[in-house]
Length: 472
Image 1 (tube, one colour):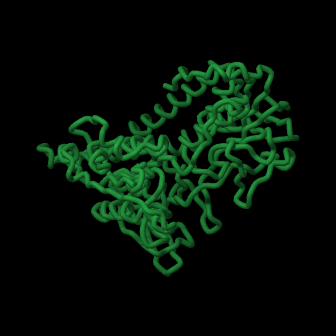
Image 2 (spheres, one colour):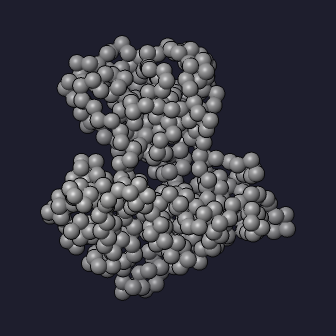
Image 3 (cartoon, helix red, strand yellow):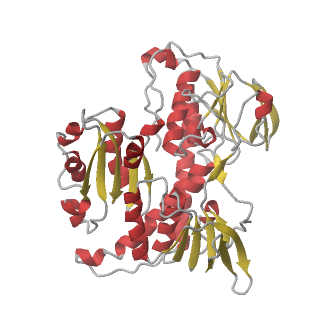
């Protein structure tokens, strides 16, 4: 459930402008967070949503994929239980039950968000909105059209999977990421195009369900934006799973194979991959077309993203952009915080107490097996800039809890300032990395020192023990 217990600073209440009309285009993580917080501060808020309140990218992409990854992880774990004194298990997947589970989670989250917006007297309109001037939006929906005049507006319309010119997804064999759930069938074999975060998650998911997976890697290692040591651990796991890695190859065409109703992926180096299915995981594009940006005088860049300043303000001082359309980190956590900061700025709270978003300190995770998470300064980034750092690393294989879990893969790496001991960043590869990174994220945000972690009385036995050891 989404909590209604968020408190409003006392100083902010005196700044609330009851008559301020705030219009939000898009009800995803940024939009509904901005709506509920601004409404609590006294704004009259209207949210216009085309697809689903809660966000299409969030509820139709992120939540289903992580649900399937969780199920796949349970399957993978069942194959390791022999090392825990149990008989080897070989579970079968019930597609109908999995589909029902995905739909149930989506519906629960959607209903929670709608109830939260309604409890704050936020007006919700199903339809599409476009600017008609710098202070008005026209809404077209099933109940007709209307024009809404606003004092401030937020564009948080999200993104959708990117489709290159050389490919035409059919939703059957040639898929975008959004076509993969809820699953109609589990592919016998699949080629994943794209070795970034989404691509490697799909490799993990499909291989867990028993598919023969080929990953087209345009660089020389997966996750080109991450620590090579981190990527190496993941590649080792892929190889053990039987995943085929086509390194240094770029897909240039995907076509249906009429002989066996499969697909053929051709790469620019002449290599060809045949499989029953193929999925594109090569990023996303912002939903900024047909918004009437010109009518409102709002600037966008060549990629369709809307540039913003540290307050999420566009070139129009009363119009904001947040979430994927802002071109910042495409993370739900970042979008949510952007929405909160927008509400604070709209209602004048930033003039009293306000902390700007520091995107360099955002934690992120990749839900593969093992999980990968990082925050703050990366080791390679520090070396390339000539910055002096202290790097400490502890493998989970030395941690009692990892041995108890029969899963000693991965490590904890902490990057700190050698002079002050302040934690600058870190990476975690292993079980529950997405949860454990929160400790380092707090340390990075609050400028804590490694000694603060060492002197914390953590639980034992626990995987977090590796954090304290790495901070020594």
